[in-house]
Length: 489
Ligand code: NAP
Ligand code: MG
Image (cartoon, rainbow, N blue to C red; front, side, top):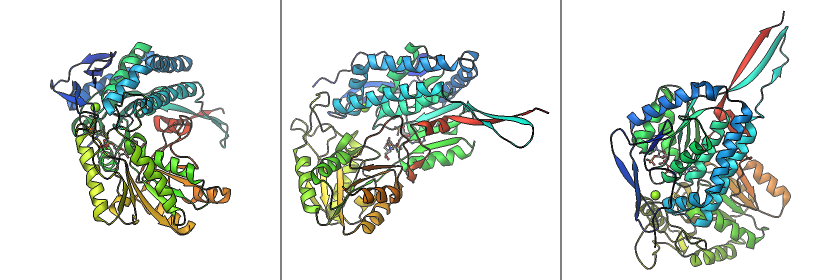
């Protein structure tokens, strides 16, 4: 299989102040194709010194008259131009994402489409972010304006690399900020391509800088930097906590999109065929490496056997395929480390007494132990206190458990440190609304799972983080409000 990289506009260097530069320390690191472990290329290993240069470039660009006084309509056009070039290069972006992350081509296409949508959605907001005039006591004119937060440090994970970059870069630019973006070490390539696209669209130098590198060095330096005003982070809950502690020193604003262990609940009256399809997609999309994955299946005891048989049947038919092949539905997991972690959880599940209905081990790729593959795995007989029911596995592993009434289902569902999303399957409209109200999560899906839209807010309850990305709510993450008083006496 060819794992040659597609022709790109980006270079494998850092993108700082509109230029491609080597890391100051001169280091580089490999990025792999997870399907076979082949090295795709080496990218620059940015560190604290590079972050320093990038933050300075961002600060200068932010203060530059060209950006500060750019008409809102022109800023909107600029964002739209970025989206147009992304669309023209959609095939390159899709292949790049498929190669670097390993996800099936068809899923990468959906990501690219959604990333374009994010730029267009926020292009629309640029000319609509007005302030208020407020009827205060006294003879004053009091009004508010939304101003940019300043220099935004964006740190993103490897599961939806381009999409997570777009969710941060698009609203941050729309609101007039400057950005330093640190992509995940496993998937740096689409962020670099996005930087090249922004430059081609005419984004002034320094407004988007991309520093590839490691979290403990480049990422930590960005969070600790005195001249960064805000950190927008998507990643694990564990790293989110480290970031919050470090950001406290300079009292940076922080928004966090973290992990999840989302319950997907099937009531006895559900359309079981639809629920089986939905539960399957909920956990196995992107090989389970989705923060909102429906990794806990709660099913009414009266329909459990029928539902699980349907899901297990689908799961055991899912076979590894070349991610670049548009027909492929199962991709690898991101890395050797992640594969071992997920296989470790499968062993733990067996040890806890849960039964494997499908999968349960490493999957072979073209008959070989190559790349990082895990069989779509379905566990029956899981108890709510099992490790595989509590911890985020972030792989293709479904933990199924039963309940006997609605109250019990809600109690089990909410018994988690996380609260990112939840699904419920029922044909009873009253029950649907009751579950939507009582489940603790930032997104509730009824008779569906996983739809997202640039216009609809997304984020977590509890230890799944805070702040809402997407929709109008994201404007609050990237602006601060100024209240102006004019004495009219
Ligand atoms: P991660 O280990 O938390 O890494 C995320 C990003 O943070 C990476 O760029 C990483 O750099 C960087 N990082 C690591 N340590 C850091 C530190 N001390 N200071 C600053 N930055 C640091 O998460 P992951 O394994 O990439 O992604 C999986 C996790 O993300 C899962 O828990 C998943 O649920 C969550 N996630 C959440 C959402 C959401 O919207 N809620 C979306 C997607 C993923 P390196 O790449 O060098 O480690
Ligand atoms: Mg890679």
